Length: 120
Length: 514
Image (cartoon, rainbow over all chains, first blue to last red; front, side, top):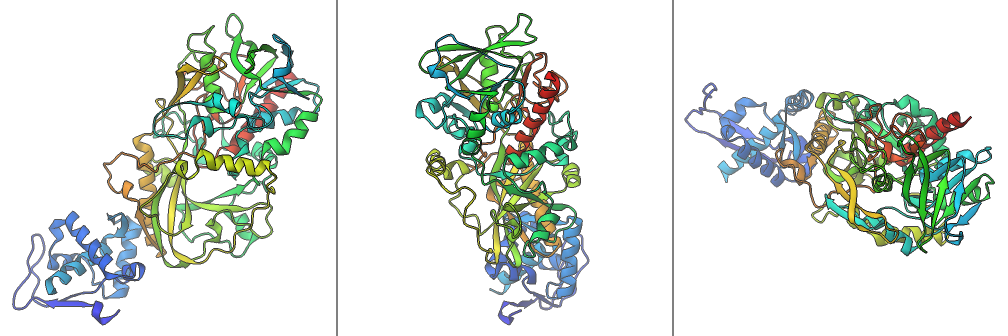
């Protein structure tokens, strides 16, 4: 992964909370574009676009902490690949802009999109 | 023997044992089976020995419902029929097509796939195909570069073989014309089917020529082999003795008109570049007699579980762009005419240049080839207008259903899931498939000039026009040959199956007359 494609931000001195999940302590929050999709599409704009579309369809997940709690870190490639494989095998897929994606990679796109907008 | 009906004395009576109406793929396939027999076979062709504008014009008709190709150009009206411009795609139907699928009402056949296997093998020869081998294993064994995509058990690769394509006009004209017991009458348009008083048997046919002459045909057995649209037209128009037409006691003639739905369905992006020789357009496989290619199909188990129709997806390099045209728009009547003319001018048969090994690529466009659900409202009826011979013209009302579209969408959803699971790539549905609630069809929806149904097969006369032997219910000596008898359309192009069914019918009639 290229460093410039790795977005990082932090939520300083506070907590993240969203309905139905435990409180998350303040920590560094990072997100990288889902590796498989990045390789597939070859551009990050497409990943942001998919993330935005996912969030529009799932507004209750428009929360960095919520998304982090719901999915494995995209930068842990092995863990992410396992989760994505499990999603596809179990039918836990979503359709975004016509693309058939695993729920995990869709959330990775959303997280990437959210973090990108926070640091911009 | 060839006789031009326009040269017969008016009111001639033509007599034989078997009369075949229509000299296209079905009619000629049947006639070939009878060469050398002791039976006199009359083969009636409405057109001439070659294409004639005046004759072709009799096929003009109205199109209502889904947009469709002009009826005057969707079929060919001369000896050889529509094989004069067909592309040669051949594959047998599949097991699932013959199953009793409660989610596809009206699709049940009274026969099984195993009943057709011996006839498919014979049809393969008539259509100048390779061995009767349609398993991907066989074709992989012919060429180490031909490999299936490594998908799981939910998907399989259905194989097509490609006929040269056999132009029946060129390939079988001599055999038919030289056969002593076959009498081919050209310019002989059947305008009325005349039954006995009780409508239990056919006594004869009225034929007319464009010059205004009328003749009569008498035979023991009659076989309608005019194609699904014209068969229905002729039965419906033969309404002097039965108000609804011959064989139409249950208002089924003309209904259940089916086409193959051909439409862009999705884009596919592979993780790694793929050559996909197995799926490339008509590759010449080393060591094989004919070109063959595969298309992706969903397993019968998955179609059952998802309660969807049977179809396949072809793969071609590239992505679908903004300016998508339908098959009808790409292959206009003028283009089809060009194909026919190339053949007539001596285009070398079977010598198409072999495509090179496809360049590896990551992006492919997927095109659907799917059956449509049998739909009684999708139908052929008679127009108020009459042609020059006094026959009511055809009105085609091609209609599709919610199940047709839902099946296409679900196929690509499941394919996307499978490609993701295997890590091969991702699938993007075409825009027109994205919205679950949108049941509209795009402007580039196409059929494939495959006319099926209209006299479909069923044991129950209230559900089908012909029985399992292709005999019209209630009429002892009237049979239908061809794709009009299909109870369901299946995924593949119909020619191989319609010839197989015709050969089976021919055997049946031989048993009747022996």
